[in-house]
Image (cartoon, rainbow, N blue to C red; front, side, top):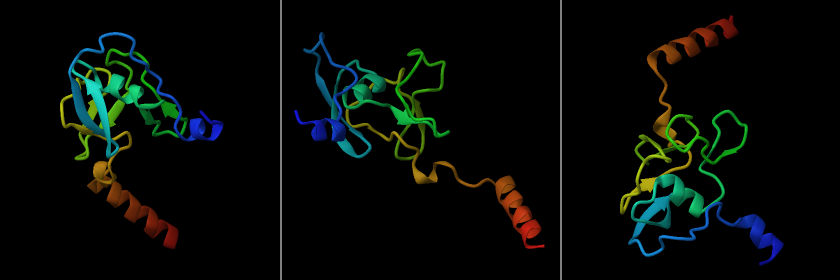
Length: 126
């Protein structure tokens, strides 16, 4: 495989070595078709299709899960509607769709944030 192709599509982090006879399930990851096997968690599906689960909200790079038991907050993914799911403990369901970045409407401005922004805008204008 060429070096350019490897950079564009790095190999998956997980490679299945056993239990390959389980039924395949179709899902979507970031709008792209993907497959998983019955009994897989979202974490397994995501890392079988790429090198990361999501990017950190704090700008410190890609995340790939850490504790693998639902305690560390490192594997959150989202549904297109904005519901958060823990990839390490959520089983794949046929037809499900997940996003590795929060949907645009995920962080709607709250009333207190709007008030604070208005207050700061007035202070800056004065």
